Structures are given as structure tokens and as C-alpha cells.
Length: 384
Image (cartoon, rainbow, N blue to C red; front, side, top):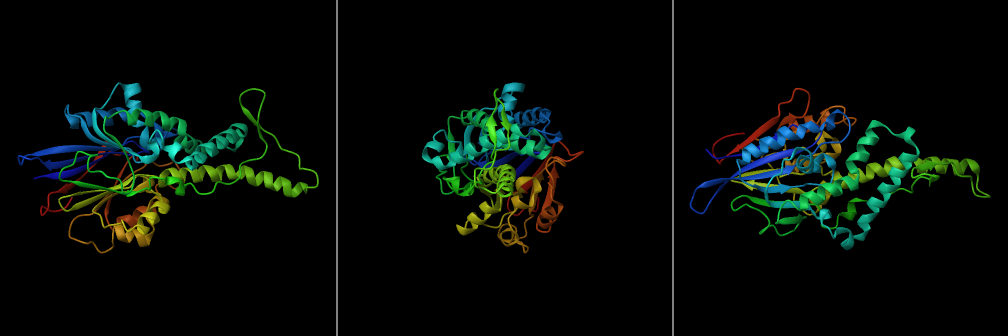
């Protein structure tokens, strides 16, 4: 019996999915196409222990059995999705041969030349880093995790490796042509999001902190500026404090923007529809709805490790996982998470909302197995 399988690996707070897709060849035989999505974890806290990568990559190698990976997909440029394969190559000596690779449009080498407004995300991030270097007492474990996960210098190093893994690398976006970009002859993939120009998700950044200056050495320092002549001192110092708080707001906005630029794609195979949304947040889900691309699915990777903002709002969730199933097939979801990495993630109410529509499998928590398999048998053979 032919069965499509999604294997979700335990990378603690990160994503790593191996999708094994049976496909009929021209002579009627079947071959398994292996699709690997992301592979990464966070760089701080218990959720970021890097020893998780060796067993994952060794299992992927065992599944490939000497064949190249048919397709690798990086959904977005966050370290908990991007760092695994470069790390495995540099630290563990494990490299995968890859036939095709899909990277987000923003990972293209000329992206910032074609879309210069996107550069403001990096300029703002640099200013945020300078502020927290100048005011270390304002840093928390959560802020450190956000800084590490969104550091574009780190992700640039990962992307540089990932874009060179294959001679057939495609930078994908909604509406792009995939006809020559993948290994599938029977299964059909469609990119639902984001736009090629993803600057719409960056929004308007708040004015940055006053009083951050370069010290005598290389490190910046935080000084309290004096009010200009004629300006009320109380009003001025409230402005200074407000600007300093804006560093956190802007960091959260950059994090949201990086999530919202996730590659969201569906894969259809013999009557099943599977959805891989990266960490797309609600802004991206609403953009997808505007363009009428949302469809009922039988499988969904839960976005952003079980957080409310990585899940479609209720009226859109009903378009993806309707309360009344469109057919009699099993519906499954999987969430990769790790407690105490970020506050309120996973959010139990969010997982309960999804669990009322699909069976939710969890991976990455205490005592989790090394992976969870979700199976989708050929049409007419039952559930998952």
C-alpha cells in the first residue's frame, strides 16, 4: 500500500520535516521523492541545544539510502528554521546532496538591490543591537532569544550555504512558476505566500532610542541627553523613555515580519492536501485570504510552535480546517515546540482550537521521541 509520510523531527524549539512522497514513474513503478523542510533550532536556552542535529541528519541520511535529497525547502530566514544543515556541514561533517532547493525570494543575492525598502529591516535591527549593547540591564532571556533568532548576519551565513547546496535553486513566492523547479511528476505543489516583494510586512518602525552613542572603544554607550533650549524637561525625558521602549517594539516587529515572509505551500497527492506554512502570522494569512488561495487541507504544520499569532484567525482557520470536514479522510496537524523557550509558547488554547478540527501530534517536549510519523495512505485505504 502506497503511503505518503510526514516525519517531524524533535529539534526542540525549531522545525525539521521530512516528507516521503511515492510517485509513479513512466514504467508504472513507484519511487519515493524525499522532501526536507527547514531544519533548525533556537540559539539560546535549553531549546537551543545543538546536539539535536546529529541524530536528525543521520536519520535523514538513512532514509535517503545513498540517494540525493529530491527537494530542500527553507521557509524563512529565522535561525530556528535555517541553521541545521550549515551547522551539520561545518561542525558534524554531514552534507546532503540536493537535487532541487526552494528558498524564499528574500534569500536571493540581488533581493535588496531589487527591493531597496527591505533594507530598513536590517538598518533598524543594527540600531536595536546598539541600544541593547549600551543598556545591557534591559535585556532579558526572551530578548536575547529574539536577537539571536533574527540576527540577519547569522541567517546570511546559513542562506549562503543553503543557496549553494543545489545547482537547481529557485527563489519562490506566490504565483511563481514551479513547473521546472521541483522533482514531482504526480504530486502538485503550489506556493500560497508571500509576495515576491515582502516589504509590505515590515510596516512602519518606531523612532529609535535617543542617547545611544559610540564610546571611546567599540562598544556603544547609553547617555541621557539634555533637553534642547525651550523644551519642557519632563516632556523631553518622557520622549527619551518612550524611544528606548521602542527598541523592544521594533524587535518584535522585525520578528513578525520575518515570520510573515514565510513560504507557505501546499502539496497535493492522490486526494490528500498537505499545508506547510512555515511560521506565517495572521497578517500573511489575511493576505492569502484576499487572494483567495486558502483551501481545506488534511494536514497542517502548526505555525510558530503553537502560538496564537502563527495560527489563522477563526474565520480563516475555518477555510483551512473547517469544523465540518469536507470528506471522510483523517485530518492531522503537528507542532514542534519546547517549553520555556518563549513566554506562552505553546499556547494551549490555540492547540485546543486546532485540536477540535484535526488530531494534533506534538514533538519537542520533555520525553518526546526523536520523531513523529504522520501517514497518508493512497485514496480509499483509510485514515492516517
